[in-house]
Length: 173
Image 1 (cartoon, one colour):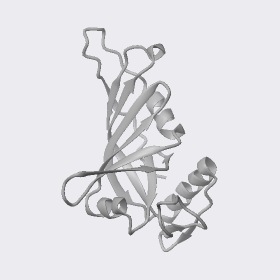
Image 2: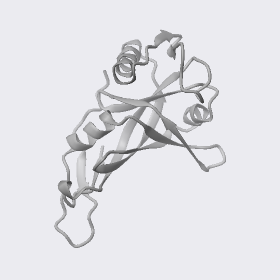
Image 3: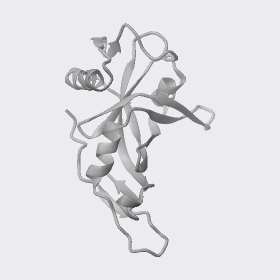
Image 4: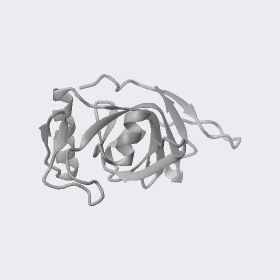
């Protein structure tokens, strides 16, 4: 497991004159963990953004996703690991900004594979530091699927439910 699950510094994003409030990091982490679908933004070689829907899992303080080496998002991450990931929960929108890198540690690969199996019932096997599977997303292309770890630098939580109060928060790592 990695050691990125540290307690970040929380800052309020509310600037409407109300008393600033922050949400506990556990609230954001739970939603990042529980989300079903994610939007990954990468940097295209031309400098423009490249956004695609992905599946992802939260393991030990970082978010993990996969890409075929031939896919534009994978090529973008290999060239420039800066990225963002957006998710929507019923009561909050989240944007994670971070740095992606290939996962190569066999024990971590297994932990990520186990998380994908548990969350999505996607049974993968390890093959040359990547995932092999009998199927993938229709647009993913054939295996192998390279796992990427996205280490958060900042996570922004935008509250859209008054039950959470005026507590839109930025967590910095």
